[in-house]
Image 1 (cartoon, rainbow, N blue to C red):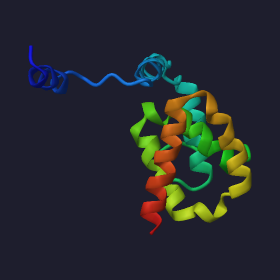
Image 2: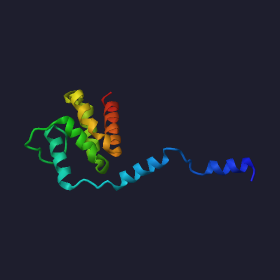
Image 3: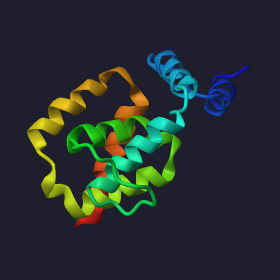
Image 4: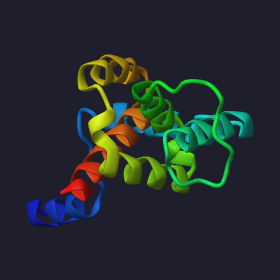
Length: 132
């Protein structure tokens, strides 16, 4: 086999990189994460209802910590598209109510899960884009 044939064959094969084994493990971890239970989703939707998000569920009677709610939502948003859109829409319109310093402190707890951190990044990025 010539060098050209070997290079052509390598171009068709998926690349192998140093971090690929790590990323494969993270993808497996993401796919193995259990979906949130119905009670958790109901609590989160009720909290969003309390702060004025347009959802068809009764608002919670308890006070809502916005910064924690955003992080909790990011933990389950990958399994609920509607919830993802709710938080993005609310943040785009009402981001001024969120304490940035407190939010950064709460968001720092996400270091343990890749999909939650990625979901939070997507939420913030999309909300920023929509708020213009």
